[in-house]
Length: 233
Image (tube, rainbow, N blue to C red):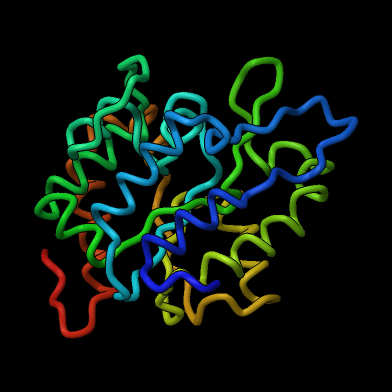
């Protein structure tokens, strides 16, 4: 890539992104970057928070969902949370559970300026999936996983060129997402070490009464990736 800043590399990546072939799987790709409004949002977001060359720790989710990144183009960010961090958008102001959690995490960290100076949020697959009109994860079907694996490898390698910290990354999702990414990382050597934490969607749907506990856990893990930083607790 010829772009010089982290932001320019991300924007270039999304502009060139093409979905994997999904023929015969009954699965549709979610690719918001083809929508002018979503492209405008991503350009504003990354231009505002990533216009430098500092390396970031990657937080790696599963794949975009319909009401979060599948709409806005920004991982774990719904239209409401996007406006709260200074990115106006024309999308229906519907909340998405994972975005609500990440919004709280960023606020607890000290705001988006401080958070995104150190961290970059992405997903195993930067393209989302739906089946029968509902969100679908890349690992929900073995045939889908087989179809998208080369795409995941290719796009992860491309994203590392944004300016990734290669010593550590945080996987969001202790089940199938971590199992797949851990195995893939052992084969491909993307990162020296993977940390793992429960996925925001799981927390908000099944452990909501313990949100504060999980926010503290996230913060502790994130602080452990910063050289010379002391974890709390």
